[in-house]
Length: 444
Image (cartoon, rainbow, N blue to C red):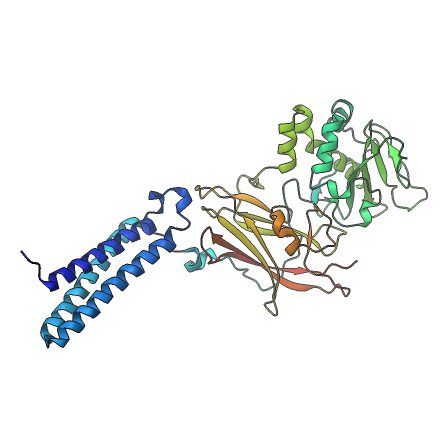
C-alpha cells in the first residue's frame, strides 16, 4: 500500500520531535552520561535540537509550497496546523519531563547566588589566609612576659637527625623559600610575618625567616645568636628596639626573628616565643613521621579550609591579604566548590572605571558533595604556563604574592574582586560572588 505524500511528511515531523526530545534527556539528567562527557553534552544537545527543528521546518515549507502550487489551500492550512500540534505536544512532553527532573536554575540566573557587599564601603585587605602559602600568621603571646627563649624540640630534632628533610622543607615551602639565605629579608616583600592577635595585646609583629649556612659561611651580622632556654638579650641602650635574633637550631639552620613594635611593649618577648612555638608546631608532623610522604603533605598543605569554630561553618568566599610591612603585595584565597569540572576566574576590577586590572584563571577543585569546600590559592595555584602573563617581573619565581600594579604615588583605590566559574567545555562565565577592597599599588 502506497503511503500518501502528506503522511510521509508527518513521519519526518514526528521523527524530528522524538529526536529533539531524546536530545533533552542529557540536559535534564546529566548524570546519565559518563563524567567526561557532561561538560560538552549541552552544546551537542543544543545542536541536535536545532537541527531537528530546522529539518522539520524545511520539510514543512517545501511541502506547503508544492501544495500551494496545486491550489490546495485548505489542505495546506490543515497540514500547518497538524505540524504545530505535533511540536506543541513535544513541548508539553518536555515540560512534563522537566517537571520530574526538577532541574535547578543556572548559577547566573539565581539572584541569591551572587553575594554582593551590602555596604558600599571597601574592606581592608587584612583577611587571614590558611595553608602553607599564607604569609600572615596570627600569634597569641603568653599573658606574662617570659625571661627564657622558647624551646623548639621539633626543629632541633629535625636539624639533628634529619637535616636533609628540614633543608628540603625550607627550600620548597612557598612560605619560606623566597626569603631563604637572606639576612635582610625583613626589608623586602614576600616573607612571613606573625602578628599579635587581639586588641588587648596591642600592636606589634615578628618578621620570621630561615637561614641556611653552607660550610665556611659566617654567622649573620646584625643578629644576636641565641639558643633555646637562654635568657633574652637586652637592648643596647634604654628605649632601643630589641635586637634581631638568630635562633641556633644546632646545625646549619638558623631561625631569624625580628620584632617590630613598641620598644616598651610587655609582649615583645612573648611574641618572639610565640613565633618560635608556631614555627615549631608547623614541622611537628615531619618530626613525628620523617618521611618523604609527610614532607610532600607538609609542603602542599590541606585542600579543605578549617572552620574557625564548630558553630561557624565555612562558607564560599574570596579572601585578600596584604602582608604587614609589604605594601602593594597581595595574596588571595578562594573557598569554593562548583560541583563540576571547570575553571575559577578571579577578576580584579577597578571600581570607578570598571577597568580589569588582573584576571586569574585556576583549575577548580570540586566534588559532588555541596557541603564540601576547597581551598584555591592565588598565585600559588595558577598554572605555570599562565604565570608569566599575570605576574609582574618584580615578583621572584615561586613567591606566593602578586602585585596589582606599579606606582610611585602609593594612593589607595577601590578594587572589586569578582569570582566567576566557567564549566569545562563551555565559554560562559557564571558569577559567584563579589567583594570590594581598598588596595595600594606596589612601589619600590
